[in-house]
Image 1 (cartoon, helix red, strand yellow):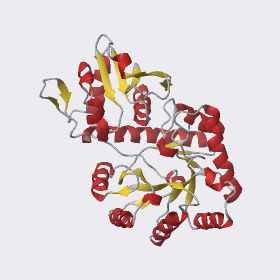
Image 2 (image 1 turned 90 degrees about the horizontal axis):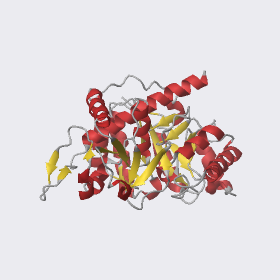
Image 3 (image 1 turned 120 degrees about the vertical axis):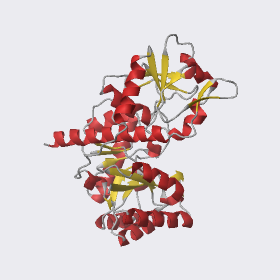
Image 4 (image 1 turned 60 degrees about the horizontal axis):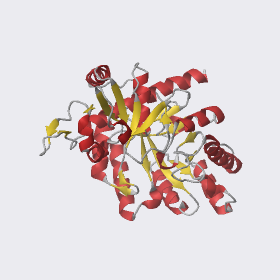
Length: 374
């Protein structure tokens, strides 16, 4: 049994009807939902929009802060003051119309930087839950809701086969979050969602809001592969002169925090040429790939990107120059040109490893939150 948070993104006045229908269905099953409000939808809102949201809140819906503008750059490259203004504007509007600011924050497109965490920690202590956002530098006491079970194979497209694979991998963990975009759903997507909910209910799971989840015990999970993963990864650091994390996004920051707590830090982060958005993350420089191609010595690469992108990004001939760490179940092969390659057809073990990293960091954030709350 797992505690499940149903996270739904992008609520505005224009798509209210989709969220209202979803709420009515979930309410009929006594399942709470969490709706991310885009702040600008509350600038001079209609009485009908406010009344509808107030009624949902009375019926158990949790509204959370989804930023103000919902742009790609809002929390990926904007400077500190702009990020603070976005969060503050939405917090103030939530308080003005519904009596209290949000207790949970989730950024548009799941983008964030360490500046985002610093802003939240320093200026918004009432926000005690972060969706899909790790505190890589360890400055925040908020709970980090990092565990996830996906069911939209692309935004707004519910795929039950995809969901079953995700669920089979994640179901033994004490909690996870499921993200959806109901304003994109077609009728068949809503039907698939209903079928998925029936399955999750039959499997004995409990649905909660983020605030309810904060009162739950998420400890007790163990994984027999941890010693093997850690022994392999720590040895990789020891036997290479420099180790780079390939990917400076959420997984990069998650693995940075996880490994730094164990005394291992990368020399730098690497991104594909033309993809560097910020110069550093967690205080470590971000390089473009062309900048490290001529590094000398024993150079190792640890992937910190989604498993499903490995083949596209890490299958480059250029990367054959470097050792690449992967969990042991992903085999080494040779391509037709005899260049050393990794077979990325099965990244399940890598995804399992990242799941554990996210669980470990979630558990730490629960403990930190409890200590601050004493």
